[in-house]
Amino acid sequence: MGHAHSHNHEHSDLKGRNLLISIFLNILITITQVIGGLVSGSLSLLSDALHNFSDVISLIISFVASKLTKQKASLNRTFGFKRAEILAAFINASTLVIVAVILIIEAVKRFFNPQEIESSLVIWLSIVAILGNGFSVLLLKKDAKSNLNMRSAYLHLITDMLASVAVLIGGLLMKFYQIFWVDSVLTFLIAVYLIWIGWDLLKTSTKMIMLFTPDHINIQEVVKIVNQIPKVKKLHHVHIWNLSDDELHLEAHLDLYEDISMTEFDTLLTTIEHVLHDEFDINHVTIQPEFNKEDPKEVIVQD
Image (cartoon, rainbow, N blue to C red; front, side, top):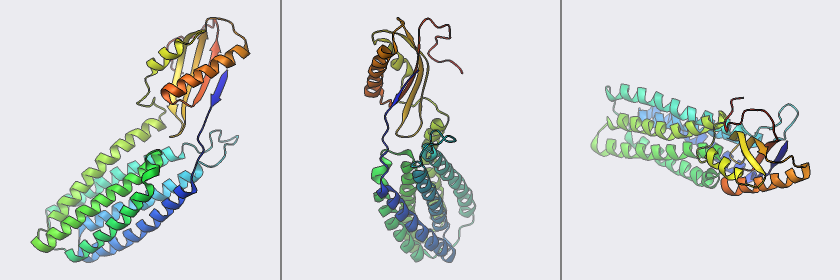
C-alpha cells in the first residue's frame, strides 16, 4: 500500500494571544452589559450580553482547540487532536443557533409587553461593545480566512458587533422618539441574523465531522484525471475527506494494467500525489495498488 502526505504545521503563538485578548474583552463587555441591561430594563442589551457570553464560551473553546491541535499523535490517538478545531466550530455554531432561538422567544414576549427603558445607558454600553468587539474582529480577521475554528470565533464576534450597532440605533430611537417597542424588534432581527450566519457554519462543520466529500471536490473528475496517468487502469473505492482545515485526505484502491515492481509503483505514486495536489489541493494520499484482484470496482464502495 502506498502512502504519502504533506502538512502545514504552522500554529502561530500570535493566534493564541489574539484569542486571549478577545476573551478578556468579551468578559468585560458581558459583565457591563448584564449590569446595564438589568439597570436600564433593555432586553436588546441583555440579549447582546447573552450573545457576548456565548462569544466568551466560543472563544475559550476555540483557544483550547487551537492548543490541542499542537499535541502530538500517540498510540491511543493516531491523529492527535487535529479534529478538535472542527468540533469547536460545530459547538460554536450550535450555540449561535440556540442563543438565537432563546432571543426570539424573549423578543416576542417583550413586544406584546413593552417597557420603558433607560436609553442613555443602552447607548453608552452599546458603544463600548462596538469598540471592544470591533477590536477583537480585527485581531482574528487574518486567521479566520484559513481556519474553520478561527472563522467560527470570528463570526461570533462580528455578529455581536453588528448586534451592538443595532442596539445603539435602538437606544437612539428610544431616547429621542420614545419608541420602546423597537427594543424587541431589534432583538428579533439580531436573532434571525444569528441563525442565518450560524446555520452555514453548522452545516460546514457537520459535513467535516461526518467525513463528507468537500463541496469543491468532484470525485468523478478526480477519478478521470488519475485514470489518464500511464499504467493506471482504474481508481476505485475512493474516499475523500477533510481531517482538518489544513489536511485533505484521499484513500483509494488502484487497479494497474501491469504487475509492476515496488520501485515502479513508488514512482507512479509520486506522480499521482503531484497531480492530486496541483489539481485538487489533496495533500494526504493513501493508495492500495492492485493487479487482477477480484474485488468491487465501483468508484464508491460502502465499507
